[in-house]
Image 1: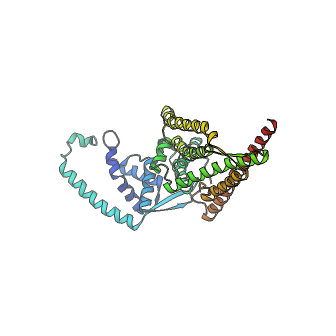
Image 2: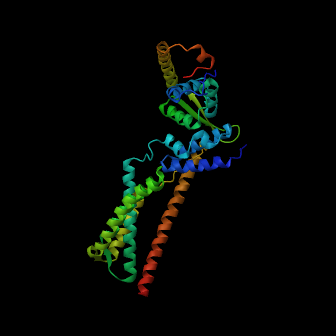
Image 3: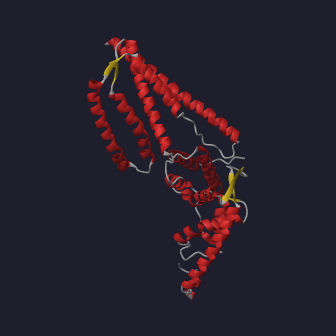
Length: 125
Length: 240
């Protein structure tokens, strides 16, 4: 996707607002673990999500019952904690995603259209 | 196959373990956090502080409320410390008097010292564990220490006047009773850091073993120190 702004990162406030939903969406694609979630988020265009941000968030999702975790031996080195969405987590993802689409549609309607120059450079935020 | 851990990862994990311990995070949760950190760093190859921030910041992100021990448990801890401190003092006073044949003295000094120890030690540990450093920590700790010293001096000056002579057996029995009550009131249970892949039965067995060792070392050291103190008091009395 690679839709970063001119400085190469999204504004931190935007990421804070959407990161939980994005992590839940990545986990909902199929059972996965911390480092792979960070890599998938980066590949999706979110930039590098640090472990210091990601793991406490995963811990909160687990405490809330949105994801379930299982420990398994790693291929090499330490064990890995695998995460999967629970039915409650999936319902939460669907509900929040619907609201997010409404929110972004509303914001898009409100904001001025990007000027051609901004579009060609990736668009300053 | 086990990958050799980088020295900076080992250092970071050691420091993180300590920071989480100071925040009263349970051993099982600490084991999970450390394994997760190691796995992430092994796979990403990042420097620990680059991936997780400073140890203090990451510990705060994982346990934002700091020490989470409930008030009831804190009160029980303070009572245990006070009971054991006062009990040991009185038991030593009684044993020394028994050995020297003099009257034992019961006064306010050990009671005040026990109160200061029970409230001051946990408070001091929390201050040291908090991110405050240097001058801020010195001021923070200095004010109450000065106050405690002033109270201590006042009690010590008036203590002898307020103390009463009693038969040696009284503080000895009272003291041993208090030590026993303090030990039973809130027994110390080890909370080992557990590898999340360890079998629950093995982890529980290790916890019981660690608890036995902790208690053996603690009570054995207390008994040794008490015996040495009585012996020293008797020797000094004979020499006088």
